[in-house]
Image (cartoon, rainbow, N blue to C red):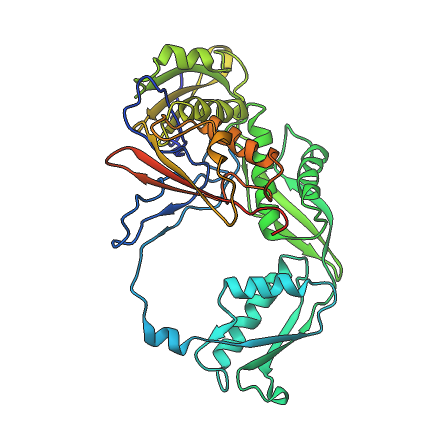
Length: 417
């Protein structure tokens, strides 16, 4: 029997979860993909460290869609001289037709292009800001836009700049083509990726959205057992107003699930976790099922029991089985982390009622439970008192790793304020 061992795939995701009976100290399972190291002078515990391994479309057996990368920022002393030299610039634009100026300004502000030390004679600023504007236009389908910047001397403001923009024609997608596909038809693949683009109301070339939809397309193919499928970089064939996108494909072989081994679990036995698995030996190796089990079902299970640092790593071994049927054995290593309890829950906002704690299903000293936290946020939203509360964006989580405690601050805004 011929064996092929493919490079082990490291799929490491920090999930939030585990049982009250086993938990001793607590913090919250956060679905937010944020990692912050608090300043040394801060006394409050820091946010949870949510580890998510970077998984490329070519490197995963699972089908979890890519998420924004986690960044770590450390507190740095403010450089007063650099702040003094970094002054606001008054920006104006000429030639915008379809592009939303408000969104463009927001983009430039995020890139800090609305500030600079010097303006007059600063050609580097105008070149870099023009490039940022062109990149923004590219994401909206304008591949051949031109941008030129200059000081706005007519305004009498020495820190005013004007950018002359010619959007050009928006480059729509005329056709998707695929090269190298044998099992999946070009029509099937093209329909799949086109439907993904349509979800974002995009019929033009946007490299970021296309890359995401290409990843989703790979997940679709892997859900049919082609776990090694790869989609290469797209080639563009342009006309003045449209583009034909050709994507190379390597489908690889079709696999069926073989043996599944689980290591590192102590809260739940490997037998119990495997019993929860939808994967059955001899079945078509559905990467989507594998991903949902590991990164949704088990995440929820651990999250309901206070374990917010659950991670899972999958190591697949591909080999030829009997009757020339290709098989993939899975070795799954679980790192449960520790259990966290709620230290306290606070509310931030103006003119808040006094009985908000009654809407919460988790309280201080409880083992953190992600599901109960989410239902508590639903209670706040269903109360009719507040503007919509986002369970991730409108909550700050601070944890004490040593004590296993979590503090939650929920930001609220009364309706009509």
